[in-house]
Image (tube, rainbow, N blue to C red; front, side, top):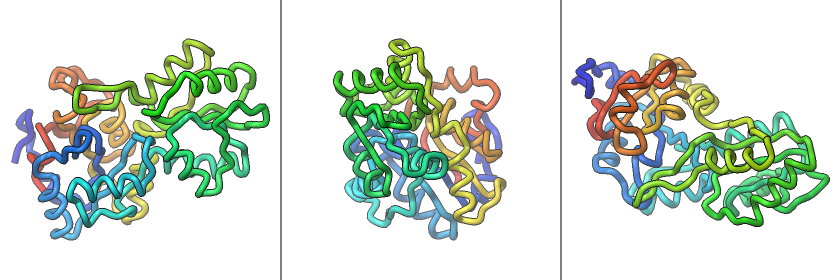
Length: 272
């Protein structure tokens, strides 16, 4: 079996851990891509594991489980996910225990963090010790006003869940966390530390959980600068698919950590 460029991709059959991006890779909005359910069944039948690693922090893990069930993937559980929101949560618990965190994000993420014991404020608060911005389809002028005020009046650690510029939707794209943070930077001069992909954090966490080596692991996604770079930064094989954001010309022009090991039109074309 060969990939789009004629490279032998038979090695994908021997993988034991498949790490999939979601938006633009396995679904688009409320539409599951063809062949995804069958592909996941093949992975299970051969004794492999799969995890969805996503930079989209707008939903909690429970929300993602519910979405997968709506799309017909009834076997999916919380154990099948690792999100940028979870990676960010671990960082906050490790580096800023008990800190009051100002968050600009969705109600879902705020609720999840409060349930996990994070002290959260969504309003300007001079006692806040950390600023966090997440991908926020519920974005309002009041939210960005409060965020800019926090960053301008206080010199605080500033994090963002992910650097993605856009999020794919059924009609095209909407601004993602990276674009939102860029607008904040233009107003305040402050840049966040981005936590999600291309950082290898989620890849390492999944490999550790399932006891898999780098040779047994592959990352599959539709973005070079996040999905593919995260896999390459973790030292594992990567598969880029053309079902989401990336175009063939982007792959042909890719350099360094953004060069995928393999290229396919969609996940259903992968040999598994």
